[in-house]
Length: 261
Image (cartoon, rainbow, N blue to C red; front, side, top):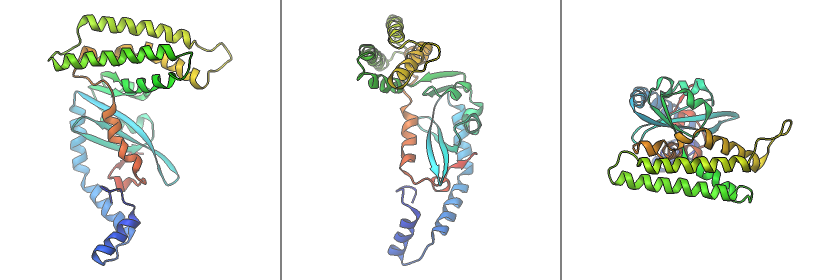
């Protein structure tokens, strides 16, 4: 039921077909609750090891439980993953490993995440997706294309340096990347100026303005991986760990997750 994402009714039908026994969906729910309860000590160990990790990835995705809207939060490394369910708020985040975390958090700029950890790395994959969306708009196309080229080129240089055993990108290439980044931020801000008093931005113009501000404000967090090649370029690890959740007909006990709100 969990590994193959089978609905309870289909699982009960399969057990009846294979073994000739009638198993109610209520019984299946009870078995899942017992299995989830048995994971408590395991989850405590995972949470403790995540708190001790120097770098963790964090993300969240929306789900529904009946008529209720909830969020599945993830905190993970390459070897550890902890999912917990609640709201998209600080109370839920603090119920997980990030509540007293003291390392570096990789995330996608959700404001709440800046309150946790002692360092931050921002996801370049999110930025590349946002920039790609601007390529269809003639007003922002040239700047978006140049920004994509800069980010991809810098990543390739960082990958080559890592493969060569370097701990960081050379000072020359880091200075050049920051300088070009700042030039493009100025162009982006000029193409997407703030709205005049009493007006609001909508659609692509709003997205372009928000992106221009984020690129300028968080330049060093997007480029953090160039000063320490052990840091990740993106937050795809967290996104991968959440992906299968979207395939489920959501039941907290079926996932073996702990409800925190």
